[in-house]
Length: 64
Image (cartoon, rainbow, N blue to C red; front, top):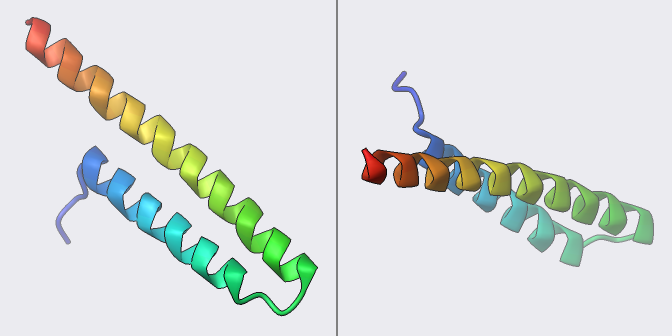
């Protein structure tokens, strides 16, 4: 299996978050909807950290 780059991890996490948000729209209960939205927010937070890491690496690479 080929390792994922940080950018690919970001893209996949963003996709997972979007899917969780789509599922939340279909939630049959407030509890299920809230759980899915909370999970989506957590995953988006992780994706943001990865994205910031990728951007900072690109900035570091361009200054050397």
